[in-house]
Image (tube, rainbow, N blue to C red):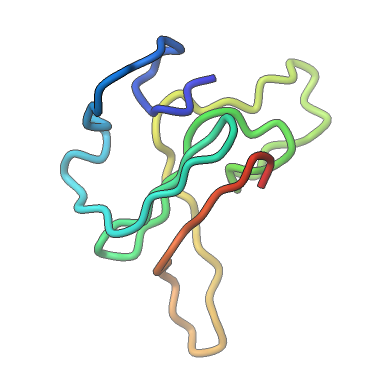
Length: 98
């Protein structure tokens, strides 16, 4: 399901760096059932894996005829401004379907 962010569906039994995040220091990482997310030190939010009901926050249409909703590599997600106008993430967590 590409939840590991390595552009493959293979199982990996030892830790392996997510290449696309190699230049970003991540301060928070979450792992869900078929998707993952990370927040960089600069406040950027990245998600990857299968997001069949919007888990990735990438704006996928749930009526997508192909039914894929999959990002095999990390994709930067636009973070909505808070009341102070700040546009950065601080922490992330994932569940089985959220």
